[in-house]
Length: 173
Image (cartoon, rainbow, N blue to C red; front, side):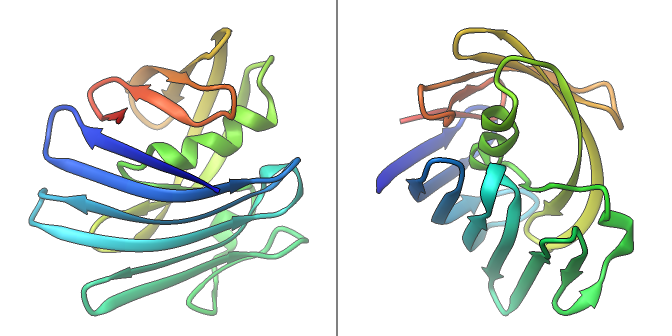
């Protein structure tokens, strides 16, 4: 188990996660603290299956909770309700969390790939479709491209695929 800490760069943000990396799976338990749009704390548990594909993301924030699941046949549910709009998604993506970039980084470290994500907005725990591209830039670097907006960022990551620098968002402590 590895304890990973990130601090926000442009707005007040902090995240701590205990991460266990297996050969082709990940388990994590963490907490994110933020100040925008108002102060919040989100506690989460993330588990992937083979090839780093999300199986479950459970979140708690204040009096709210979310249980996001992906079955082995690709069906997603949010709190038990079917989410057919997410059927192309392999991964979850937690807003402001460098951790959830790990799965696509590890899955295809040497080739560009487009993904549909089950993006969870914070602190409201809303679930949205997000289309993204990851383009390798050489050892320990990847370009993240939002396919739904003009946002891009060049991420740096360590030998385990954990983000060390996400410009404008967070830096590993």
